[in-house]
Image 1 (tube, rainbow, N blue to C red):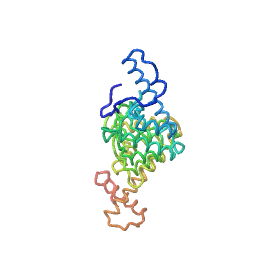
Image 2 (image 1 turned 45 degrees about the vertical axis):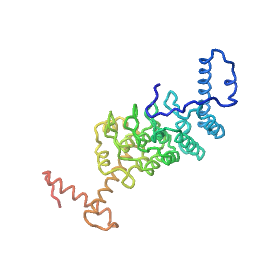
Image 3 (image 1 turned 90 degrees about the horizontal axis):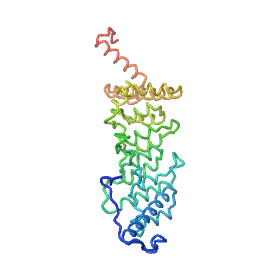
Image 4 (image 1 turned 90 degrees about the vertical axis):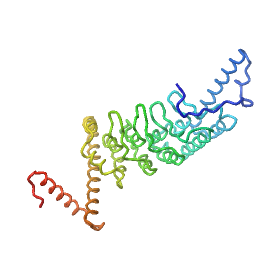
Length: 325
C-alpha cells in the first residue's frame, strides 16, 4: 500500500534503551539483519499501540506514545484497512455502551498525540481509510455521539466527504445508511448537527447523486433520525420538497425497493414520509405567516386552510377549472 498524500511518518532516530529481547539479540547478518530486527520491533510496538487504544489500556498507551517509544509505535501508521491509531481508539462497541467517558478520553489522547507530530497537515484527523471513511464517519456509524463531539472539538471536519465506496458521503449520510435496521443512530445525527454538520450536503456522483442525509434516512426508514433532520428547519425547504416528491428518480426507486423488503420496512418509511410532510407543511405555514404579516401565535390550522386556498388559486391559474374561492 502506497504512502497516502499528506501522511507524515515519524523518522526513526536511534533505538530505545533496554528495548527488550529483540534489541538484545545477536548481530547475525550485519546491517541487513539489524534493519530487519528494527522493523520487527516497530511492528510489534505498533500492534501493541493499536491493541492498547482499542482496549482502553491507558497505562500502556501512555507508554507507547511517550517520547522514547512513539517513533516505534507510529500512531500515524496505517494498517491494511487504512486505519491509524485514531480509528482503533473508537473501539468495537456501538451506541451508549461504547460512548463512555473512557472512550472519549482515549480519542482525546490519540488526537492530541497525532496533532503534535511535527509536519502533519491540519487535516490529519480527516484522513480516509481504504473504505473511504474518516474517523468521524466511523464514530457516526457507531452512534458514538460524545466521540463525534470530541473529534469536532479536536478539529475534525464533521462534514468531510468520503471517497471510494463512500464517495460524496458525509458523516451524516453514513450515520443513517448503516445496514443494521435496528441500530438507532439518532444521537450521532443530533451530535453532528449540533457540531455544525451540513445536513443539506448532496452526494455529487454515482447512483446516489443528489441525495442528502434526509434522503438516506427516509429510504432506510430511520424514523428518529428523520425527526432530528426535519427539526428546527435543519433540512432546507427545497430538500423537504425533493424528498416529499420522491426526487431524484434513484430515490423513488430506492423507496420502492426498501418498502417491498418487508411490511416493517414499509411502515417505517411511511412514518418518515409523514414526518417530512408535516415539516414541509410547517415551513409553508411559517412562510405564509411572514408574507401575511400575521402574529407568531396565529392559529396554525387557519394557515393550513390558507395554504390550501393558495393551491386552489394556482390550479385555477393553470387552467384546471377550479375557482380560487
